Amino acid sequence: MKKFEIGKTYYTQHACNSDCIIRAKCVKRTASTVTMVTGMYGERTYRIMRDSERFFHAEAIRPYGSYSMAPIIDANRECA
Image 1 (cartoon, one colour):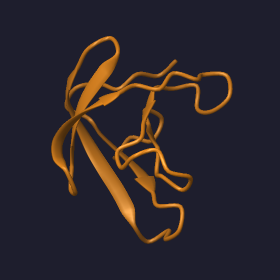
Image 2 (cartoon, rainbow, N blue to C red):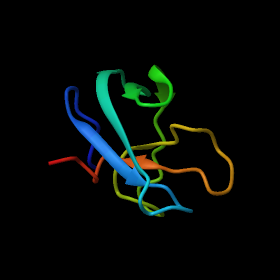
Image 3 (cartoon, rainbow, N blue to C red):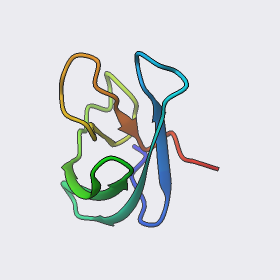
């Protein structure tokens, strides 16, 4: 399973607007949480989702909540 790494930036597209790119930079992590810096909330700590068989085969977070169309950032989508 791919994991978030400190110092790397990850991204995703918003479900309703593909022109909206959401980026988050990993600044700190533990075994169950990761601290990311995003444009909307600044530095914030998130619980890591680990459902490797169903979704991404990677760690993932929901930076803007858990509503039906909420964006999900996973460790497979690293910015170049």
